[in-house]
Amino acid sequence: MGLVVQKYGGSSVADAEGIKRVAKRIVEAKKNGNQVVVVVSAMGDTTDELIDLAEQVSPMPAGREFDMLLTAGERISMALLAMAIKNLGHEAQSFTGSQAGVITDSVHNKARIIDVTPGRIRTALDEGNIAIVAGFQGVSQDKKDITTLGRGGSDTTAVALAAALDAEVCEIYTDVDGVFTADPRVVKKAKKIDWISFEDMLELAASGSKVLLHRCVEYARRYNIPIHVRSSFSGLQGTWVSSEPIGDKKVEQAIISGVAHDTSEAKITVVGVPDKPGEAAAIFRTIADAEINIDMVVQNVSAASTGLTDISFTLPKTEGRKAIDALEKNRAGIGFDSLRYDDQIGKISLVGAGMKTNPGVTAAFFEALSDAGVNIELISTSEIRISVVTRADDVPEAVRAVHTAFGLDSDSDEAVVYGGTGR
Ligand code: ADP
Ligand code: ASP
Ligand code: MG
Image 1 (cartoon, rainbow, N blue to C red):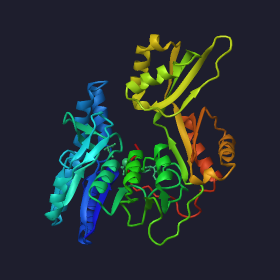
Image 2: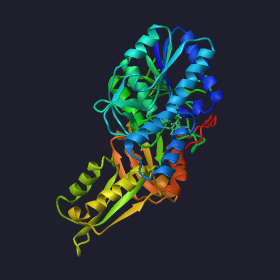
Image 3: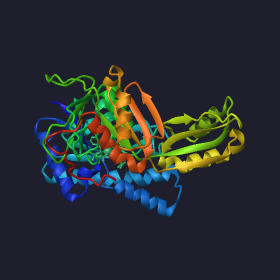
Image 4: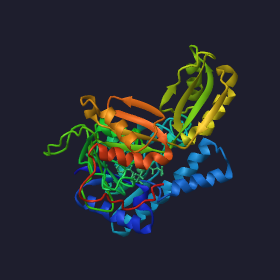
């Protein structure tokens, strides 16, 4: 008997109908002779609504209480899903992250999983149950407080459980038919990818393709867990994410896997920094001590007359306030004139392992952006990715232009988005 882990995202369980539809699908997997573990997200936009609610009560809620609040969303869907499955005549039991043995560090709002001890899940399965686990949450190892894994974290819960239970596959069910060459909400002519390597998927996820969370792909690569991303609304085969193509299909590694975009970041410019050793260190130590992850960094040439320079970096908008406060607090220690905050930026990234060996990819990328009249503010590259920062308003047009320029447009079906609000 095989063991499968299935994860259903918020758009798949947005309402009672959705929960009943998903319950039928889960029962099918069980009837096919599998042991089934299901990881479920909060219904629809519940998490966003809970965040809005918290902000109305307190502008900077304490991490511990914020996590306690957010985990309620997944508890609602796990219990309802277990009820719906029982209603179909099958045994199901729901478990919180803590009950399922998801042990994390104690960094609230973005905790990392450090161990998974799924004893209760094993027992439930051995007793013939379908096990339903609340995604996106765990319990901290030291303080035994409830933690959350960061937005989209149910993907990580699913892969972590798949690894701990030695599952054959981790299926991620969502509102599109798989991983596409661009977000189907932005590029109607995006193509579904049949297979993508962990490496390219990691870069796409890190660059904003939220169909899979970056940490989830990292985890899957480390434990070599194949992921099948597919729609809960259709019966179609989706996208396999694995180290090697699955089955007897000989799939060629694409030169370019896709175009990702991200409008969730902001840019901070530290203006008038003395151009001497230790300055960048002081700025980024301050940011690191506030437990904020940054993305791109650029330093301008210093003006010869003043010996001062500007340093800009990007970070999640959600960390903007915290970063500005931390830098202001350290203004005397670092030494700078002023801070500028800009949250009207977007990032566009082109990803593909073929970039390494195909000269001209960077040039063609910049040409496509220039033809679309898009101005570039920051640039960063890795071996298999080029990213630029532009005005947020330019992002949709820029993504489509790059997608077309690299021959990624499909000439047949338009990509389907089955549900969700894209929030
Ligand atoms: P879920 O609620 O199932 O977790 P998410 O909203 O987190 O779903 O992720 C699915 C969404 O990811 C899609 O609706 C789509 O808009 C977006 N997306 C972004 N980039 C891509 C891509 N390259 N391929 C597929 N979907 C993408
Ligand atoms: N409900 C959480 C969120 O909206 C976790 C998830 O859906 O993966 O971010
Ligand atoms: Mg998601």
